[in-house]
Amino acid sequence: MIKLEKPSIEAALKSLPSWVLSEDGLSIGRVYRFEDFNAAFGFMTRVALMADKMDHHPEWFNVYNKVNVTLTTHDAGGVTMKDIELAVFCDAASGT
Image (cartoon, rainbow, N blue to C red; front, side):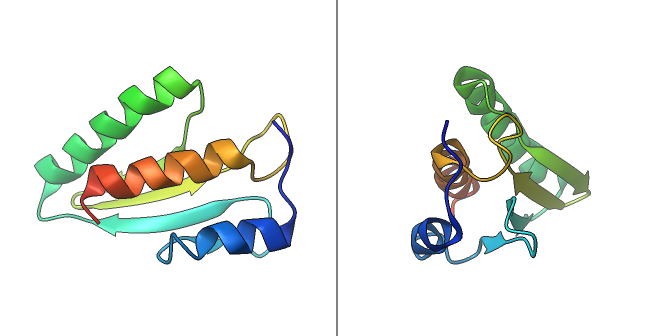
């Protein structure tokens, strides 16, 4: 995968308005809030199954109904299309 340049990432994020580019430009992130822990865990399960199929795994943190997701492609040293594709899936899996 080829690391995307900042203008390409910003253009892709126009269709993912809740996602933000990190200050260093090496990752994108979003916070999801759900009704309760079961809904948050269900979301994480759906994303985990897709991430495994993609062989591209998120960095995330969960407390009760909140899930913080950070996406980056370590092999490429920054954001790639894999991250954008997984972000699109995450939004779909969350219902947002």
